[in-house]
Image: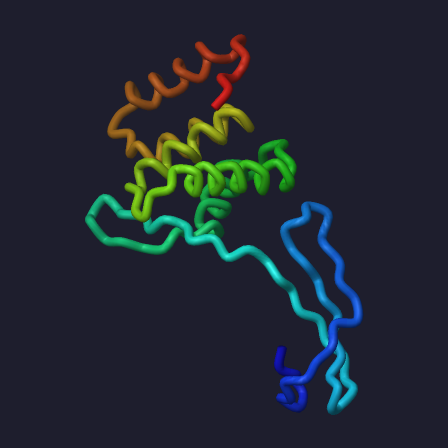
Length: 158
């Protein structure tokens, strides 16, 4: 590892620690030449699939877009940020598990709706109304009826 201060390639690791989840390694390093210390982080670099939009445009998967959509749907709802993060991580994990290089954006939207349905029914209807582009009140009412039917049942395991 090259020193960020003097660019010398001779550095030593003085301390190594993993985060709580064990997926990031933090290393404290010391430059042999200038004796300055710095921290590096090592994490797994996974290749997420590219997302094919409805118009045919391809884009890299962006977790922040999923989080932003979910956060907007959950705005002013009693759901913890940790629960939203965990749902986004589950979506990301499912996308990786599919092993595809490209996936239609519809698949991502369906995964988001499934997670929102587990988190908060109101957020689910909010997201579905925009995502499915409801044209009339009947389509909106059907989404509400769908949520109402599943209220007493335990959620299905994925």
